[in-house]
Image (tube, rainbow, N blue to C red; front, side):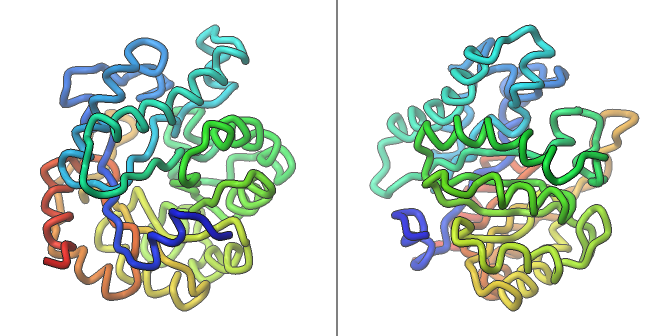
Length: 301
């Protein structure tokens, strides 16, 4: 699928933003709700715009929207009806667009509409296990309606991210067909396998012939897992690769707290670029300061 965004990848790399939740929490917002950052679309959308702006000003070329955990089912649990939920999904794209307008850069800025896995809606860490118990048809029916709404809001690309297994990847690939917006497919991994334990060769192969998918890769993983995954993605698909790992700290689901230290020096991103990554940034616990370092590291100057 050709698009302006796909063309930009050809002359990449493009710098992705960091963890949106990280920036929102740094600004004092409580994200303990099951909707996570998506709650603020209803309660404080200006906060979302400011968080996106912080990353654009830090040097990011691409903002990933706050819709990762935004689903019709999740909003319904909060008493938000379908029509209002659709408005909030569209608002996630507009908030990022507004941040790009305020940034007024000398370079083109892009918006990626996030669609997290089914497990993200459960808010119990299921996205790090996969195999959620739904069949392929059920997963496709879960994802398609919100992808239709996000696509109608005209983002530059759909970010099918933090995908834990090939079952959900296959459903997402079917769900994006015919939407008219390109997508990237990004797995969360541990070592050379998906979180559900499937080899990455098998996982990336699903997207090799998917016309809608213009990039494949990994996110929400340890920085140490990126280099090998990038090489595998290039070898299996020949597509541009997306790479945006966590800081290196580990999320303790029971304690609901981060453990350990950051292992994400910006210098690592040169290696990812040399191996074939064309969309490079950070996920959980990666803030604007790190994105500034990444942008400087990857700058041709």
